[in-house]
Amino acid sequence: MIIKKYIGKTEEEAIELAKADLGAGATIMNTKEITPHGVFKFFRKLSFEVTAAVDEIQKSTVTQTKKEPEEDSVPDFSKLQQVLSENQFAPAPDSKAAQKEAERERLLKSRQVIENDDREDNSLDKESDKEIEKKLSTLQDLLEKQITLNREEEKEEKEQAIDKNQAYLDLIYKQLVQNEVEESYARQLLDEIEGTLGHNTTLDNILAGMYQKIVLKIGSPHLIDLKTRRTRYIFFIGPTGVGKTTTIAKIASMMKLAKKSKVALVTSDTYRIAAVEQLKIYANILGIPLYVVYTAEEMNKLKSELHGYDLVLVDTAGRSHNNKEQREDLCNILKTVPEKDKEIFLVLSATTKYHDLVSISNTYSNICQYSIIFTKLDETDKIGNIFNIHILTGAPLSYVTQGQNVPNDIEKIDAQKIAKQLLGGNS
Image (spheres, rainbow, N blue to C red):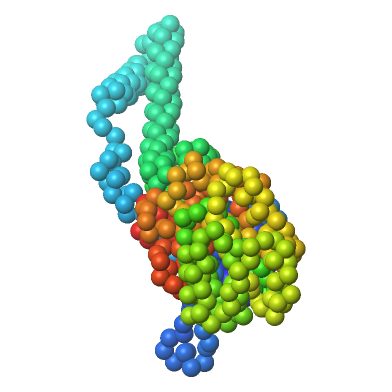
């Protein structure tokens, strides 16, 4: 794992420097605004520091000594360490160890006695050859026993160190599973970390390695592309009841107010009158148009009116993903826009059971490629499903929402925050 810092005049410039050096697969682990202090604030401009990381496997051309995690990129895992403080791994009194120590002292005394006898007998020159051979044989036996004892102690020390590492890993595994990380994915994380551990790795280093592994697996968020000059169509798909319409309103507000984009809304969710009325209210507040379409043919005709907009946010009907006819209607709507001009976001609720999330995401995977938005993070303290579905589908994570307030309560996915929560660290 390679970790580096880059400084740029803007956050984007620092990120570009990181990806130019580490490659497109680099993960941005931390961003920090650097403000000049004292007299320097009159001569230096604001700058940004970015901490980026990449797996050594992904960037084999980079040769760099593996570093310990940067202090400001490793979270506080006080909750997990509190559990450890109540279950210290100090060795209990061991009668076997006491016996070995007594055996060591006995061997040492026996050896000293033989050596003293040799010195006395040599000075008197009274020792026969057989007696000398007998003492030499006895001394050799003692030395062999001492070597065997030393080897046994070294083996036990290594086994104790391995046991200690395993105790730490078991505790981390338990923490991940309690946060509803799928057991197979939790075990996979531990297997990848275990091979990098030394004989006496500290808990801090194990946690830091696991934290960085999770951050890299989550990756950078996939956000709505605003760089293209063509009209960009953003489709929002997903089941009913996940907060899709509210999420669209939040994104429309963010793009209109913060990004100064020219935005239009389209809804094909004509099965829920409340959803159309809800979008009308938001459209009126933001001063943006709302169009209602009933069929793919109407969507095709509407496109000619939307050429002047930067973004067109399309709310699709949130119906059963198990209904074949309704899936075909969705496919027809999506096909009205070429691949190069559209993005698709699957909206899922963090409160949905994992089994149902698997079924939903697999069904939509058969329809199109998508990025994932998770809603209702404020309604659960178990976020393992975010990690699970990302690993299962391979789809990029994008935004998360945590409340009903528009335009607030939405942000881009933060891999560091997710990793901290999964490991029981302070947010």
